[in-house]
Length: 413
Picture 1: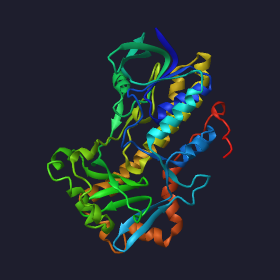
Picture 2: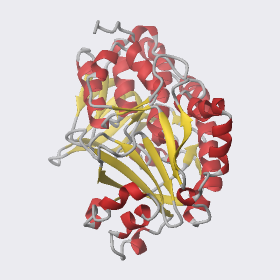
Picture 3: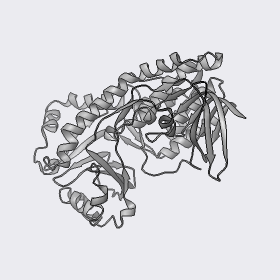
Picture 4: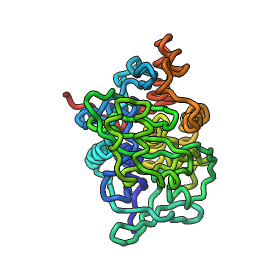
């Protein structure tokens, strides 16, 4: 029988952070990741200042700084009179006054290398959890299947579901949830970037298209919004229409109207917004998207999940070591993380209703507004306001810090 103290299912940012922190506490941890590597496109690549602070606390800041990254320190909107600054991160408190745009696979590889230095850490790739194992009403582990078809079981004192919004373990546990309707789904695709293009994050709202372009150096990672459930119908038209509808109002994109040549280049994200009313049952805890599926609005999902992992490690390390873990400890994690989750989802719901839905209906057209929409005009007159949304976005509510047992000094540059 395979056994570990803590079994983490899902090798995304939350799972890898939790595994690393608990391993540094001296706890035997096994992380299951169903793929054979971390290399998958169109995952969230935004690393917010709270996560950058955490990497510094873990002694990984210098290594992270070596990764290919773009620094996003302001958000601008293209209007009829040119680019207008909507918000700036340059006035944030702390060392990191920007959001780092880093390929997620590079971040996960960094975390895996750091965790691999801990004797109690075990990463199992190509291993997918398929169901929960129960004993006397308690979750005692999972059954799994490997890429080559082999099956088995791993037993654990605690199983943590970090396997995303389509969590197998969350479904198997039958935990109650609440969901909210969303007005949109998202198409992801890449677009060539020219040196003369503006930098940073560029939202685009025209009469026919709402999108955001994320600066990745030599290319744009693009997200364009479509009405919820409209993917199948929209794909019956020419894929070139995506770029034509954007370039009609954004002149510097006109040289790329033919950049998309096949619908295979356009990936669909089915947007969901929900939250478990109970994140745990005896022997099982859900965190990250497995506990609360986030909208891609503001790109906060990864960082919220990482914060969940840090709180879980700090609260659960001692009872895991002493063998006294109970559902009361799991409830403490949920209580700690409910407020920031609820506030963030509330903000996303507000933006869905007041910004996304009107944009999809074509009732606002920022690109053709000569002076920009009202928020831009207000922010231009009162510059200090440009720092308020970024503070909520980048710092959030109740940021978590690495527990003492996981901290390491950063090597000198």
